[in-house]
Image 1 (cartoon, chains in turn purple, orange):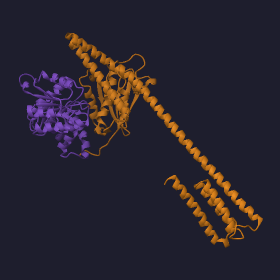
Image 2: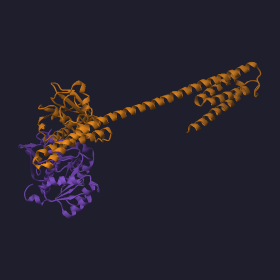
Image 3: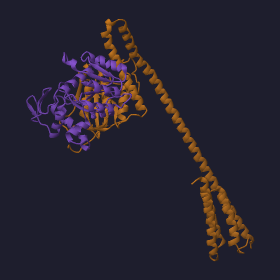
Image 4: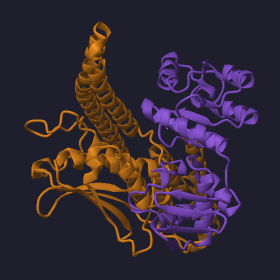
Length: 234
Length: 364
């Protein structure tokens, strides 16, 4: 994200700790000079209405309103990507926010490069029209969503219908974290049931077919305790 | 019922029994002798003493004595006695009843004293156990304070000094900043470890055990080391011709176990590969992390799992806070698993993380 285009993006940082807010803004300011800061959930929701940010960075532990309520309000007002700042891996609150429409999360303490990279991925995602019918290339893997075919090095890969559905959902929105619940709902068309246990087994089988080294996956990434995401450029 | 009501009920019960048996024997008097009556009364005296208490037994004995005399010794229905030998019978009855009453009551009292002693001993030993637990907790706290203050102060000192130097002279900022980042990471890891350890000791750790695949955990473990140059030394051994191996475990906490074991293995073996082998046997899923480091002397093999353990002799790595293996083992045990050490054939260490394996019927 360089040049003139980047300057059009407006970022909103909702975080109560002033030093963290400063650190986040400092890390992103070079690429995105237009940064609005809010220190409470209420101020953050107001800022979404008045300033129409292109991306929101939301701290999970705000003093005034519950993070889930802030996330739901923002999602009702805008489709702009939301990145959640969380204190621990796989926290149930984080999963709840992702289920409520947040797009990604990053765990404190984070590296500023990592944060900047996540922001870039989410901004690119939000500006890319989602395609369910194109051909997607990733790490030598070619996925033809229209013909429902995957191949690597001109060899066709045989996928079961469920494996294909899982891959199609993940690939439909590269870079986005899908929670276990969201994947299950998208593929099995229901939110609960025994088949939920099988999600991880299908992901493992899918990796054996599409990854170069299934023990070190580069395309379907596990988000511990949260879910999975597909990465286009490993 | 309160003890007092129990007492009244006992007295009422045994005295009613005495009256009732007297009535029955009075009706049957033509067919029984005074010896029969005496035996019945002795039985009631014994019962009253054993089930109730001493004074009840004595009262029943005296009433029995009078009843034999009045109802069952000629002349009937009078307190006088015909023959001198009948006096002997009466006195024998009374003394037998009273001696039996005395012996029984004494046995009961002794049993009660023994029970009280046992209770006192139990209470005392509970206190001793409590004191021992407190002593152990206090010892751990001392070690923790000593280690934490040393381990936390070292990076803090470096961070403070370098930041101060940057504030005074910005020209060295870049080089210093890199060290500050490294030291802050070290500090952050230590804070997380100490927090986890205290939560594990306090039993405040909630495990979320679910059916997961071994490969998913293996892949997530290797990803934890992405961007680290040493990660190139990690090798995996897994049989892809077999269906995916499954286990019931908490993914996030098991990932910490694996990360700690692999991190330890990478630090111990300078250049040699670290091999992770996944296998399943006897209802357990196992991850073996093998290195070619110096191994662990026999005397140290259990101590390496203690919190804040430091190897004897020169410290192998200044960055190690001595918590990784302790936390790994406790996290494994908290979800029904284990972490064990063994010598590796050909030199080095072999750490095995074992968790209950799982089975799913068929894919849907």
